[in-house]
Length: 145
Image (cartoon, rainbow, N blue to C red; front, top):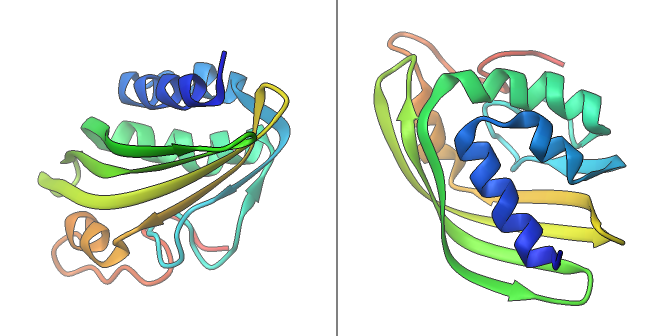
């Protein structure tokens, strides 16, 4: 499978809530970096390894979103990387607010596995959707590091 096909599969699997299928595409030592100030990221930097990503991101984010989709606008392919521009859309269940935000992903590959994922997203817009009434999202909506 070509890297672009793997990325498309990951987006479909995330929309379907299939964490196991997503993790199967990742290298054991994957680096997974959400955008700075992302509510799920907390004060730390990248997460490393499938277990950390499963526990700190997939298990937390997956159940909170309804109809989450990555709408791909453009892709740029290189020998061992794929850059994807698009929009996240979906409903954040805790606030019942809809998300429609610009995003860019950089996927790097080693052999047939995803070696790293870097996300760039409008975190201010994301925080507005995720912020519960009377709550301040500082660092992380869910966990502190």
